[in-house]
Structures are given as structure tokens and as C-alpha cells.
Length: 126
Image (cartoon, rainbow, N blue to C red; front, side, top):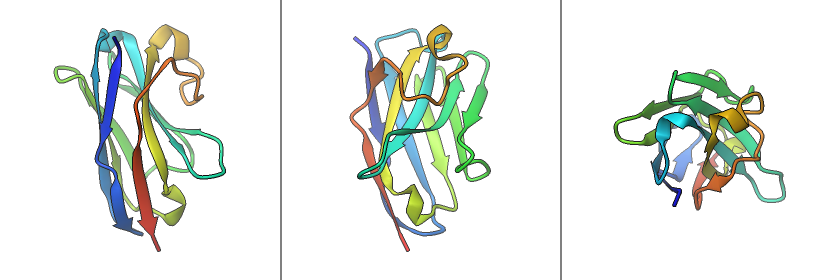
């Protein structure tokens, strides 16, 4: 059974940093793409970043490029999202998602992954 457990959300002032973690289990980590998505109240879920753990390739939404960094530890089946220079508009529920890389390749930031975590709230105050 695929399981994704997020942690690391919280309340931070604008300009601050947070690091989100996604602990994965139940699948062959190297065969999957792992994505981070977010959803603010009243808005659609949007892709933030994605990583292919097999080759380390990464993808970012334009809104977070240069501020967020995604990384993975394949031995620990864990993906992190380091978020720096946070802005109030980054406030949202953040979700980790996983799907086979051959399924998500080409649409890495589309919220169409098969497996999702429960989410972790990130709130950035101004």
C-alpha cells in the first residue's frame, strides 16, 4: 500500500523558511515521481515542484523558482521541500503526491498523481 506522510508545516513570518518532509512507503521509490502541490482556500490545487528520484531531475512552478528547493534521499524514501523567502501568497495546504514516472513524465506539475498524502498547513504572515 502506497503511503505518503507529510510533516514540517507551520506558521512563519514573511521572509522566513520552512522545510517540508514527505516520507514514502509501499512502492519502489526510484520508479516514481514525487511532487509537491498546494491548495489555498477557494483556489485550485497547483503544482509546486517535482523530483525524479532516479536521476535527480527537478521541476518547479515559476512562482517558486529560486525560493524553493526539492531534494530526495533515496535510501530513506524521503523527499524534502526547502522553502525560503516565504511570502503570504505561499499560504496553503501542501500535499505530497506520487505516481509512476512513466505516467507523470511530461506533466510533472499537473495535480493528476495517483497517490496523495494528508497534507500539511503552511501559513505565512505578513
